[in-house]
Image 1 (cartoon, rainbow, N blue to C red):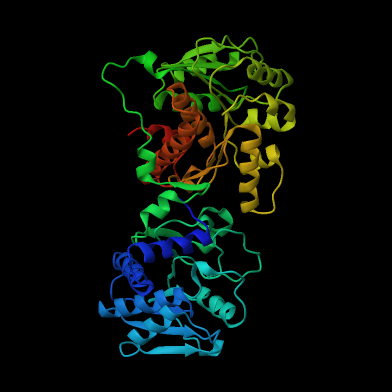
Image 2 (tube, one colour; image 1 turned 90 degrees about the vertical axis):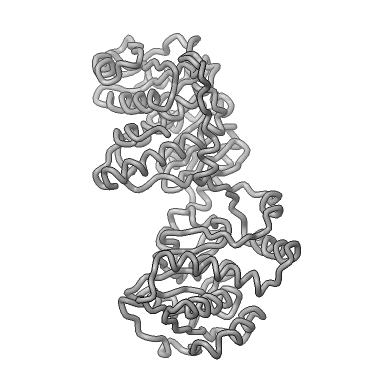
Length: 493
């Protein structure tokens, strides 16, 4: 799924109106019907509804939604916030349609706002995606009043006060919905951790916008949903053998951190690599042999940390970093590996921290190397940023400058390709915020690279598969109780 900017969203509506053809009023009706269909699936008629409308097209959506819900037996009350004398044409036409069906109250001052009770659902249709400046005056007061209401809040298309594709100021007044029902495509704002309180659970409803415009639209931002994630799976041929699926090398672990080697190696084995070798310091030998008998163990000459590079000729992909520490000899190992490697590479954890302290090594990274930092690791690697939009732009520039692929971990993990394209991930949950989860991702990515997935597809699909396994684990164990091993146990299709 593509993620479009404000200008493109307007152009998409216009292309639909022109080429279907359909009037803007009827397109608004179709969007409102889609919203109501979503609403009916979650709330019955026992809950009263208060709809707050601005005077633009988002307010027009709110009026149409109110009329349709009322016709389906819901008790609806409608409030139009009179923050301006101007009103869009479609708003005015929907106001005419509703005026003999539902009483519409105009709100000229905050004291005219209704009182709220627990069984009232609030629908926010104040501003929508056309916002160009912060909510002020009466609008800001109304938003604050709505946010204090005890019942659930649902925003139409996007929370009022939230920009679609740029950062808000901390002082901005924004609706804090429980749900956002957005039209056709997700918004960039939904992907940003700083906007978590202003999106709630968001849902995309199809309103039949012009498919050709969407296909032709140029954007660096994409959203990997279920269908696009599953489309990347390589299914196995009947006469395949273990050599078909590559030989992965995991270089991981140090004294006290052999668990990182176990987790990344188990994840690699469970993600389909034909053969797996794990290079660990001597202190990890027996642990790996017992915990993962399917793997071959390459024992380093050093007892407590990795101090040498094994022979590399037999491997089809290499992953390095989980739990390796940052000893001087280990730094030399990474330097030597970067000089010798001729196969795809994934770098994570301590190996990333080594790169941060030795930025000269960045120039040695092979093309399309995958790096998988969490936000703090990325900050150490690339520098600080003022907000998450700036951090994303910093990551895009970093990926293009160094010709690497970045898996910037978090909710909606951003896979940033070497050309600057960004693929946000749809799977995963907060239960994965636990020690070892990143090591599991390293193993998955190494396995996919070994199986000859392109680095781009390995990163996108690996992140998707990692999150999907986490979602399965959360259903079985709950988000609180699950651990990184549970992610491994739920890998597979």
